[in-house]
Image (tube, rainbow, N blue to C red; front, side, top):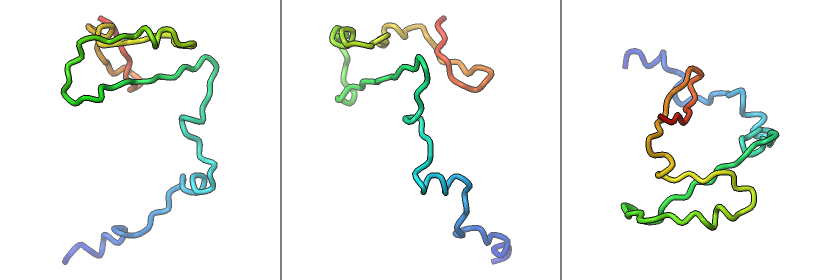
Amino acid sequence: MPGLEKRKWIGAPIRRKEDPRLLRGTGVYTHDVSLPGMMHLAAVRSPHAHGRVRRIDCAGAKAMPGVREILTGKELLGARLMLNRAGYRNLVRR
């Protein structure tokens, strides 16, 4: 077939610059990062596909040490996601 001789890179191994540090175990992942004042997020999803959520009891979560905020659909009602100038998504309340 004409043009196939130009595609010698298909199926060929490609050397990536990040491979050596990942193979040596020296890669840095988001889980490895700890910054002052950093918080973590936990998301809970329904175990029932297409189920109706009638109520959400957040009392147990609120009582846990270190919990700063609990957001449900009620708190997010009226909020929208916008793409800011840096290209990151921020939650912006109307």
